[in-house]
Length: 165
Image 1 (cartoon, helix red, strand yellow):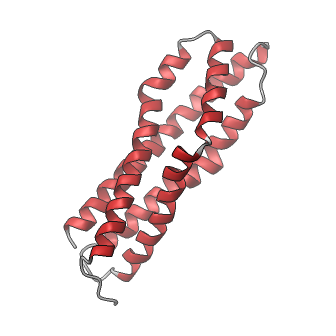
Image 2 (cartoon, rainbow, N blue to C red):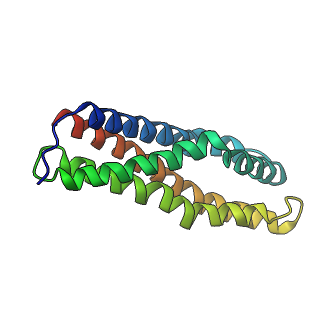
Image 3 (cartoon, one colour):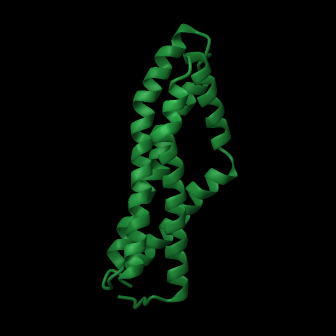
């Protein structure tokens, strides 16, 4: 195995990955725990418009850099984890990186984005909007909670990996 001690580059990449995971987790946590409840309290047309607006605003650099920049860092951590399997940090980094990748960018792309697109396609003032909105909340919020939890766990695994390096 390649010997990877707790070098400064390893510490920096692991720390940046943990911070990125924490930022992403926090953004998704806010939506799962109170933002969606606040939006859901609105009348259906207003709620649909609000969430449509949020989904447009979400696809901007701050969230995209956090979500996908952390994905790139997670790939680096997976590689470092594989290279360091014989050392204390290897499994922590490997599992943390995989957990973030699967639980965040992959889940976002394959599950949340199609639901966002379906909501974007509905006219908030039609009878169909109520059904689409109810389904959206029922499906989107639990998946969003999974994104928050997996990002938080990935951050914790990166920190543990650093601690045992």
